[in-house]
Every structure is written in structure tokens, then in C-alpha cells.
Image 1 (cartoon, helix red, strand yellow):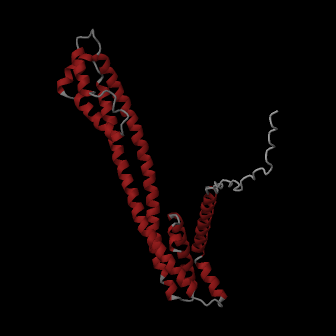
Image 2: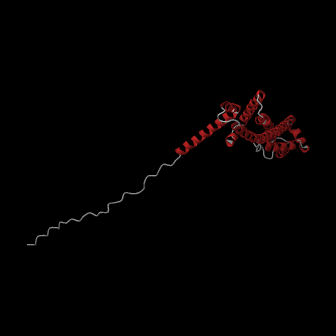
Image 3: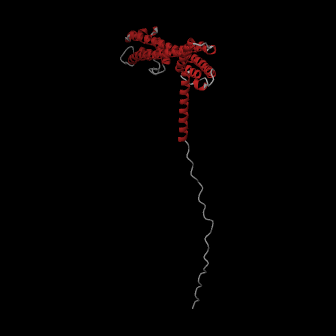
Length: 285
């Protein structure tokens, strides 16, 4: 039973413990007192609260993760667009043979884009490192005169820096959301283990609290833990279905028996020689 219960989804575990807690509280309020059974109520409430925290927390963290993932993707597109604008502009100026600023423009291009657009499709964090280096070169005082001479719009550099800052902020929030999700997953596993232990103990108590001949009390016990019994039945049905599919797959993949390779033995009896002697030749005349 323990193994089966551990396979129940976390939201289903939360639903089961919540329903059973409600049922036991109602039974306690209606009476009569049953201290051994009533003692499960605070345990059920504690496990319910832990599961709720981590089920809801994981859901919230997942939503935050998706939100920041979209932010990071949008910011990366902005970074790429601004990066390409500036790279294309400097590439043109660096190859403009009639320009008196060709050599200085080429020096600036080599400093800002030593690998051209090679890193534009890297992972965002890696790409941003190279973009930051590009910004440092563009904002370096030694290239200020060149930028002015070729009239590269300063707003492009400002836009690139803003996009890069937005991208890095989105990545930081995304990393945080992933960490929170992982934390809820790990803490939730601990709460799930407590749930399994509690359900096993509660079911054993319910099954031992009445004689089999006490039909009414047996029925009451089954009703109190009906959500748990329903989950156990569902898990067993799924396990049986998996076993059937595995057996069918094994049968379909079975190797057919190889045909016999033994040749037919030749007859060992030699043919009998002819018993009639040949006729003698007539004498010569």
C-alpha cells in the first residue's frame, strides 16, 4: 500500500487529507468521543497545511517562472535587434573606402565586435557577456571621436544598454523563480512522505477499531477514509493496466521458434546387384 500511495499526485494527496480531516472533525463534533481517532485530526491538519503550502507555492513559482521566461525572451530579442543595428552600421563604415574615417571605424568595429555576430544566438547569459564587452568598447573615451565623426546615433547605444539591463534583470528573476520552484518541490517531497505515513497509520487504525460483525461501525470507518480508499483503488487499477500493457508488449516481441535444421537421413541400404550373368559370345567361325 505504501508504494502505491507514494505514486499519487501531490494535488490528489492534498485533496484526500483535506476531505478526511473535514470528515473526522464532523464526527468528533457529532460524538461520541473517540480519543484515539480524534488524535489524528491535528496531524491531518498539519500535513494538509504543509502540502497546501508547497502545492500552491509550486504553482505560484511555475507561473512566475513562465512570466520571467517570457520577459527574458522579449528582452533578448531587443538586445539582438540593437546589437545588429550597431554592428551593421560600423561594418558599413569600416568598409567604406571613400571615407576618411575608415581606418578608425575599422578599429572600433574590431574592438566592439571582434567576433562579428557569432554570439548573437548563444545562450542568453553567454550572449549578454559579449554584449557587455561590446558596450564597454562603444563607451570607451578612445572611440568617442570616431563615433562622432561617423555619426553613429548615441540613442542606439543607450537602447542597447537598456535592453541588456532588462535582459539581465529578467534572467535574475528567472533564476530566483526556478530556485523557489525547486525548493517547493524538495519540501513538498518531505510533506508527501509524512502524508503516506499518516494515511497508512490511519487506515490501520480504522480497520482495527471495529469487529467485522459490527457492520455499522465498519461502514462508518470506510466512509471516513473513503477518499483514501478511492485513491488506492485508482492506483491499483493503473498498476494493473500497466502490467497488462507490459505483458502484451512482451508477447508481441517474443521470438518465434526456429525451424528444424536436421536434414533427412539418406537410405543406408545399397542397391542389390543383378544376379543374371551376361550371355557368352559365340565362337568365331
